[in-house]
Image (cartoon, rainbow, N blue to C red; front, top):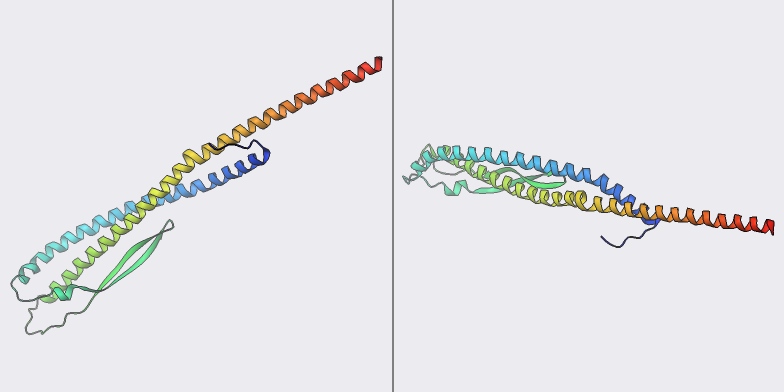
Length: 205
């Protein structure tokens, strides 16, 4: 704890600081709670998307078997042409939000390419999009967890350091000023007594 100025001015300064800390702490605690809830929500969302990804993988296994026959090459048709993202503000923190992937429509000779290729391409689009969405969700979770770490540190700083220290400083200053006031009253009484004694002595001189 730094050296304390035992003055009325310092007492006011410390009281003002304490009021600010006590006003700011609930905001930090609320932010911490919001971040924790959002992380749980995003974790659940990531799990749901991972389950959906597994289902699409099973669907694609069928098409993959057909692709192995060499009847069609669809790799160039399942590369995203554009990735579209958005963002969302959670307790003052911006996290990325997946919107969609855009693909070029396949162009091929309808007579030379099997009919199932359209369905296979769409299935792969779904899978690629899901994987991109999962990646974005996990990135958002990382951002939220880092912000939660910083916020939790600030909450602890206010709860365990700033507020207790300020309360202790206020207590010490009040004790000192109280002692000073008591001493001043005591000195005043002694002075008054001496004056009265002097006056009484003079009256009988």
